[in-house]
Amino acid sequence: MITNDVSTNHERFVFISYCRDDNEPQNSGWVTRFDKTLNEYVKMRLKGGGKLKCWRDERYLEAHAVLDEALETRVRSSEFMVCVVSHNYMNSAYCMMEVRLFHQHLGQRLYIGEKMRLFKALINNIPLHEQQPEILQKSLGYHFYDEQERERRYPRQFRPEFGGNDSNLFYQNIDKLARDIKELCYTIENNDGTPTSPSNSHHKTRCLYLAETTSDLNEERELLRYKLEQSGYQVFPKIDKLLPNDSSIEKTINTYLDQCILSIHLVGISYGIIPEGNERSVMEIQGRLANQCSQNSKEFSCLIFMKEGLEIKDERQKQFVKFLHKEAYVIETNLLEEWETEIYQRLKSTNINNFQSINISGSNQRQVYLVYDKTDIDAVSAIRDDLKQQQRFQVIESPLPRNGSDNDFQLRRTHKEYLKSCDSLIIYWGNAEESWVTAKLRELLKVHGSRSSPIPNAALCLSEPLLSLKRDYQTDYVSLVISGFEVVSSDDVAAFIDRIV
Image 1: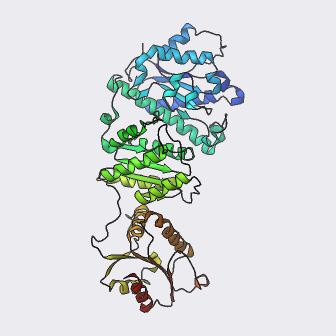
Image 2 (image 1 turned 90 degrees about the vertical axis):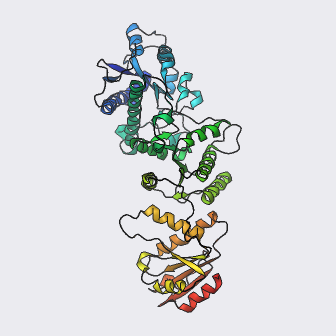
Image 3 (image 1 turned 135 degrees about the vertical axis):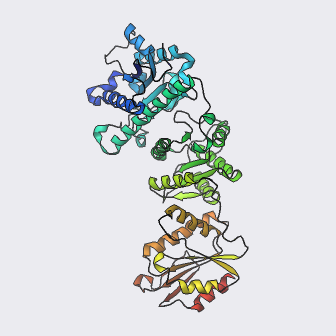
C-alpha cells in the first residue's frame, strides 16, 4: 500500500527502472552514477523529511523472465518511478512490464494535479510520439544528452567525468528531478493526493510564463526555469506539460497567460514548429498573444530576449522579429546573466507595468535627442545650450549613470525608447572611443525597423580631440556630419536646427 504521508517513519522508494545494457562498463556505469547522485540529491532536498530512497534491481534478467514476487512487491510499494529511457529500454519487455505494473497498481493515483508520479530521464534522442509505453508520452522528461546533437540517434550523454558543461548539466538535471520529486511529495502530504489547480496554489504575482522556444535556445530556457523556480516562482507551462500541437494551442496559452504577471520569450534564428490548423509557429503564436495581453492589461508585462547579431535566413522569422521590434520590448544581448538581471528588475517592482514608449514631455513639441558619452558631459554643454535656447522643440539627453542604483538595462532601455520616439538626433563624438560611436550608429540602424518611419534628421557631430580616424569621417547612418574639432560653432548647430524646424 502506498502511503500519502511524506513524513512517515518507514522507508519509501523511488524505483529506478532501466535497461541493464545502459549500465554496462562500456557505458561507464551511467545508471549506477545516476542512481547514487539522485539518492544524494533527494535526501538533500527533503532535509530529513521522510525516509525516501532510490532503489533499482541490479540483476540482469532476460527478456522472457517474469517479475518475481520480491521485485513485484518493491514496485508496488514505490511512491515514484524514474524511467531511464533509451532505445534499449523500449526494446526491453522486462522494462515495459515494470512500467505497466506501476501504472496498473496506482491507477488514477498516478496523477497528482497536473503531474505524475512517473518521471523519465532520457539518455537517447527519441521523439515523444515514439516513446513506449504510451504513458511515457504524457511528459517531456529530463534530457541527459546534448540537444545540439539532436539529429543523431545516439547523441552524447552528459557524464560528470567529462567535466565542464557536461558535468554541470548532469548535476543540474539531477537537482531538477530531485526538486520535482520533493515538491510532489509535499503535494501528496498537504493535499492528500487530490488534484489542485495551479491558479489556486500560488498567488498570481508569483506566476510567470516561460514561452516554449526553438531547440537552439532550449538550454538557456531550462536554466532560466531552474533559477526562477529556485527563487520561488511558479513557471508555466510546467516542465512535464507540452503545449497542444493543434488549433487548441491559443486557448491553452491564454489560460496560462491569465494566471501570470510576466511572460518571457527567447527568440532565435529558427521559426519553429507550426501546429496543425495554424499558419504561424508556436513561437509566433506565443509572442503575439503575450504582446496582446500586455496591451490589454497594465498588470502584465512581456519581455523578448534575442542574442546580438542573429543571422536570420527564414523570411517568416524575419517578419516575426520585425513585428517584435515594432510592437514589443526587445532586449538584445548574448549574456544570460543580463537576461536574468532584467527579469528580476522587472519582478522587483511592486507595480509591474507594461513598458510602453516613454512619454517624455506630454507636449506636442518636436523632440531632439542629444546623444553623448559620459566623457563628453562637459564638452557638449555648448551644443546643449544652443539647442535649449530654441522654444520650438524639446531637448532630451543621453541617460547616463548617476549613482550605484542606476541599472544598465534601465539606461539602455531608456536610450532605445528615446531613439524610437525622437524627431531628430545629434550624436556628439568627442573623447569617446571609436567603438562607442560605432555602437551608437548601429543602434540607430536597428531602431529604424521599430519606428513608423526613420529619423528624418540625424547628425554626427565630430569634436576634439582630433584623431586621424575622424578626418573625412563618412557614414550612411546619418544625414549630416558636422566637423567642428576645436569647437563646434553655433552656426553649424543653427544650420542643423533650420533643417529640423
